[in-house]
Length: 230
Image 1 (tube, helix red, strand yellow):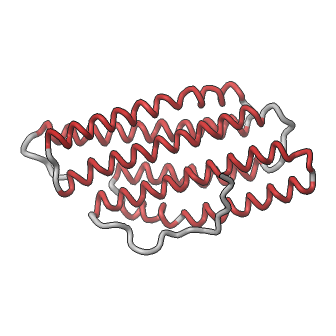
Image 2: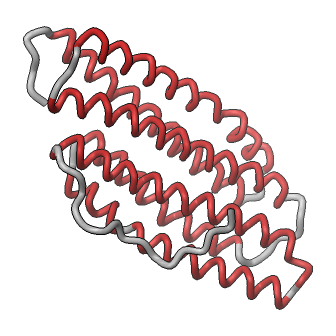
Image 3: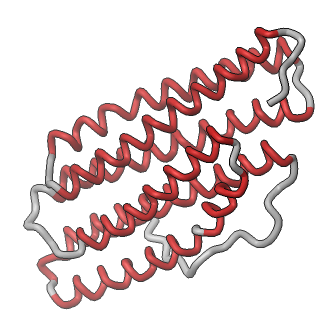
C-alpha cells in the first residue's frame, strides 16, 4: 500500500485492516470452538460460543462506523476506496461466519442430549476442510495474497461436493435406523451451516481480488451439486 501525504490517513487505513483481522480471528475461533463442542459433546463450551457471538457483531458495527467516517472525511478514490469498501463487505461476511458458528453450537447443545451417532465424524471432516479455507482467506487478506485468494475460490466446488455426499449419507443412515432421525436432522442443518461458512470464505476471496487487483474474478464461480436444507 502506498503512503499518503497525510500520515494519519495511512494509520486509519491500517486500523481498519486491524479491525477486520481481529474480527476474522474471533470468527475463526468461534467456529473452532463450536466444532470442539460438537466433537467432545461439551455443552458448556457450546453455550460460550453462543454467548460470544455478540462480540463479533460489535466489531462489525465498529467497522461500519469507521468506514462511514473515512468516506465522509477522506473522500477516497481508486485503491483507497476499494480498500474501505472491501473492509465493509468482508466484515459482513465474517459476521455471518460467526452467526453460522453459533448455529452449530446451538444444535450441538441439543445433539449432546441425544445418544451419539456415527455421522458426527463425517460432519467434522467437512468442517476441517472449511476451517482450512477460512484460515487461508484470512491469511490472504492480511498478506494481500491474490493467488491464495484464487485458490480459496477454486475450492468452493470441493466443499459443495463433500456437503452433497454427506447429505446423502445422513439420509441413508436415517433410513437404516429411524431412531437416529432427530440427531441426523440436526447434523444436516449443522452441515449446511458449515457449507455456508465455506461460501462466505469464497465471497471474501472475490472481494479481496477486487480490492487488490481492481477487477472481478473472471470465469464462472465453481459450484458443486448442492442440496439445500433451508
